[in-house]
Length: 283
Image 1 (spheres, rainbow, N blue to C red):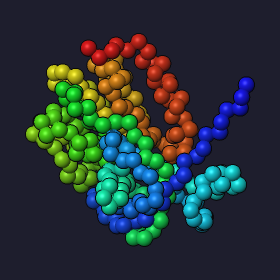
Image 2 (cartoon, rainbow, N blue to C red):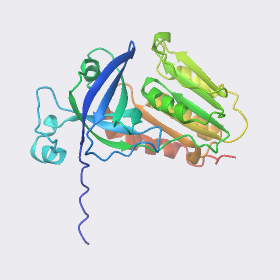
Image 3 (spheres, rainbow, N blue to C red):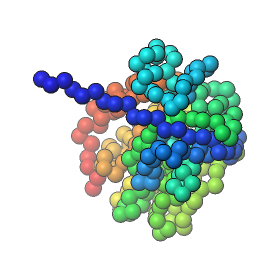
C-alpha cells in the first residue's frame, strides 16, 4: 500500500493591529490589516472564522512564522496557542478584518491580548474557514447564540434580505452588553440577560417556547456546548428540522479551554449524532 501523503499545515497569514475599541464592558473589537501578500477568501459565509496564533509568554519566533518548523523542532509547550474567532466583517478594499473578543479581565489568552492590543502589533492567523450563510430561499430564519456567537449572528443579520423574516435570540450577561445590530422590519431581535443564571438556559427556554412561523426555517445555533446540545435535540427531534437546514455547534464548553474542548469535540458530536439517529427529516 502506498504511503499516505502527509497533510501540510497551512501557512500562517500576517496581520497588524490597526485599532481597537471597547464596544461593551466585556467586548473588545480589534481591526487587523492583513498582509497584502496573503491570499484571503472571505465573503461567501457569515460564520467565517480564523485561528489566531498567540506565542506562549516570553516566547518569540522569527518572521515569517513557520508553524511547521515550530511543531517539528520545539516541544508542544512552546508552540503558539491557537484560539478560534469569528470574523465580524472584512473590507476587501482595505484588507481590514474586524474581530470581536469577549474579555473577562486577565482570564484566558486572546481576551487579555485584545484588551491591550496597540496599533502596529503583529498577529499571525490561519484560515479562514466557514460553512454557513442565511439561505435566501428559506421562508424564515432562526438565529440563536451567546456572546461567543454574537459576531456571527450580527454578520448573518447584515446579510439577510431586506424582506426576510427572522427570529433572533442573543443571550448576554446584562443590558450593558447589548449591541446595535441591523434588523429589517420582519426581524425580531430578543436580548436575553443571563445575570447569575446558567449560560444558555434562557436561550433554551426561548426557543422551546417559540411559536414557529409557517414554512421552511434555516437555523443557526452556536455558543456554549451544553445549551447547544439541548437545542440540537429539540430542533431535530421535536421540531423535525433536517440537518441540511441546521448550522449548530458548540463554540466552547464550560470548564474547558479551547485546547481541551477541541480535543474532545469530535467525540462529543459523534455522541450527539448517535443520540439522534432516526430523527425525522424536515417536513
